[in-house]
Image: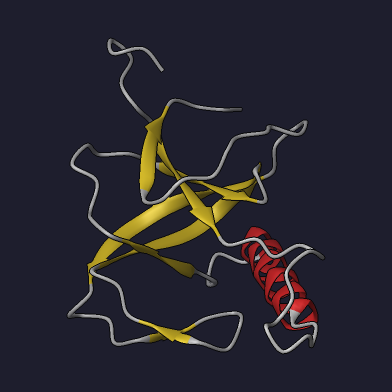
Amino acid sequence: MSRTQRPTGIIRTLPWYSDRHRAVDGKDFDTKKRKAFDRMMHRFKLMEKSDSTSIIVSLAQRPIQEVLHCYIIIGNVVRVRATISRFIPGEEQATVKCWDGSERYSKWWVELTAPVSWPPEEIRRRGFQGFRYTTDLW
């Protein structure tokens, strides 16, 4: 994105757990993390079919620029684009139970709603902390 282009969305990286991740005691916890990934993707697919479904994702800070979309990177691949409904301050939203069963608190939450769209082809991007502004990726 060049400095003269106005961003239309943000990109947020979410955790990815591959077969390489193992618990310290030698037990494989990848099954639990894979289930979390499957639950998340299932939720995005439900959101694609129903306007009444939404997802909230944590943010360390609220974007300054107004944007319409949020792209989600998982495992260095842009997986999905959803519409930003609103930003929720952390003090208004108690802890959130995540797909992996943990509970998290965040300074900001972004509520994502339909319409949802999937990339027409694989878009590889390295993950990062926080979010970044972007123009339309598709």
